[in-house]
Image 1: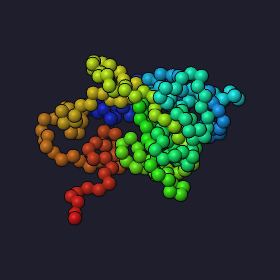
Image 2: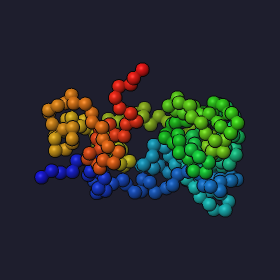
Image 3: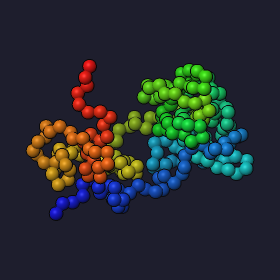
Image 4: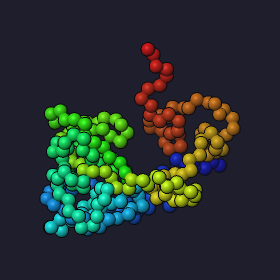
Amino acid sequence: MGKRIIQQRRGRGSRTYLVRDRAFLMHLGYPKDLDGEWRVIKLISSAGHSAPIAKFMNKEGKIFHNFAVELLYVGQNIKFGGIRPGDISRLGDLKNGVEIFNIESKPLDGGKFVRSGGNAAYIISKVGDIVKIMMPSKQEKKFSVNCRVTVGRVAGDGRLDKPILKAGKKYHIMKTKSKLWPRTSAVKMNAIDHPFGSGRGKRVKSKIAKRNAPPGKKVGLIRPRRTGRKKR
């Protein structure tokens, strides 16, 4: 009798591969009615994120959470429409060359891009209603002038400078975020554990999985845009 391979076991939702709920209790991003001045009331170290999280509150008592900017401190005031590090502003209101993070993909979606510790993008140019941004990956991306961003660089830079000396520490870091580690090569597994397993046929070409294939069958090239050799 066979057994479930890793993809199937992860999809079943058992305690073995469950994400720690308390690592993702907060919704991070900008509220839709963001306006005026806000005060930092708490800095939180989150196990599920690579950067510290700041808790903000305004005079009416409304609260939201966002990734902390470098050198942010409890009691600091930030405002919407400002240009200082930590302030939240629309892309159209900022100058070229300004460092930014937590960029909205579409206006009012709360922020989707550049959210990991120590990262920052910067504005290259503006043409009409479009702003060009250089991402940390050195790729240019276009956004609407109404997309909101945080000015500055995400806190937590230097987190990769110190090496992880023990395998156990790396295991627990990855487990917090529901990442499977260590990753074992499929051809090194037994045939019962993976379709690419066993010692035979190690030079076999990767197969193309169907788009509607179930977990366990969806291995190899998954939903490739095209196959075959490119014709000139």
